[in-house]
Amino acid sequence: MREKDEVGGKVTLAAVAREAGVSLSTVSKALNAHSDISSATRTRIEQLLEAHGYRRRPKATARAPMIELVFHELESIWAMELIRGVENVAKEHRATVALTECGTRHAPGPDWVEGVLRRRPLGVVLVFSTLPEEVKKQLRLRSIPFVIVDPAGDPDPDVPSVGSANWSGGLAATRHLIEHRHERIAIITGPEDMMCSLARLDGYRSAMSMAGLEVDPRLVRFGDFHVQGGFAHAMDLLRSPDRPTAVFAGSDLQALGVLEAARRCGLSVPEDLSVVGYDDVPLAQWSSPALTTVHQPLRTMAEEAARMLLGPGHPGAAALRMELATHLVVRNSTGPVPGG
Image (cartoon, rainbow, N blue to C red; front, side):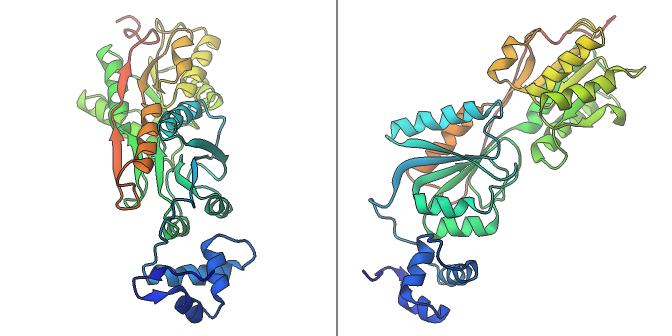
């Protein structure tokens, strides 16, 4: 059956086919993400459709009752919190959740978009810091709404996203340690190319500056958000003759590595060393000692992202940045400065 949709209210798909020098069926294949056309032809067709302002009219029967949740690392300790958040909202709409793992921490892999265009979900929640322009164009062209759940970065302003207050979290963690009279406070933040790492570091620097304390550059470390990275940096810090009396770790996993390093160095927590983590994953309350940490509302972030997809006025209409508050959870891994 011939396509009846219009492009820009004036130009038919047949006219786009003529302008691209292809058949109408080839245009239809490009729209439906078929794999039997070349990438160059697909790109040329999509550029013409975008130039004419084409938006595919959604059909009630065309969507699978499913939200696709895309990670670069499904085995991360906070993945389950995000999955539960999306599932909570999906159940309200009698939809299922499909999990996909691909790409890097910054963006999904290049082959992912072909699959999602064929699956035609109700929408896509992506746990990345950004999306390539070509991916955004293809999803919008086919009216597939998407939202980034963003514990890691700062997405482009035209991308709907849900994040958290990383700067405030870093500030609260460091202030807590300063209130216990610590001055030599080390920070093991995340990777240097991730905005959340830099925001937490900025919060740390701001708290130190407000208290009139100098930041020793030797106490500032960029980690990887994993246990081993926290352990390696902490061992180096704690073996130095002027070791810190407190460590702010940019994730709970790194904080667990710090606790193990303290144990191996013969230090007691919090009597000899105070430790603060970040995320407040369920494991944090079961560490020994129980971990003081910054609560990042991961499950709520995922719920809000799913509501943005399924609620009225989905993000195909306008970009939206939602930032949720963080707060400090005080447990047993922090105390007064030794001798203070």
